[in-house]
Image (cartoon, rainbow, N blue to C red; front, side):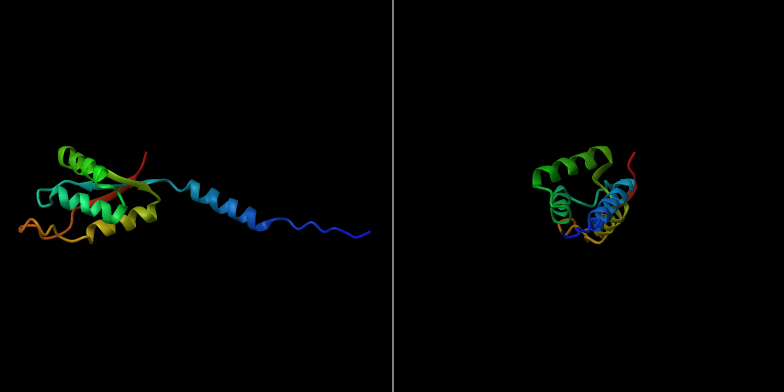
Length: 112
């Protein structure tokens, strides 16, 4: 007769604990603000490059920011929201508008 030793699956338990901690993080919105120094093409291209959005979704968001003054571009963890906000700020000026001197404005805020 051989003895059987049962070893608890600690790796699975740790993974479940990490997932539970991740789920508890409150979500944050990345908010893009309208201005008169960036074209629809700029916004659509930026959203495609930074977020992987197709042109149709980029156009919808460009229209929303143009008509409402702001648009939620993504809702995610705080750390990722900060990264995406910083990427928007670093995207650079709209080359099609000579008076444009820099990137669009964005912020993050807790999602309700």
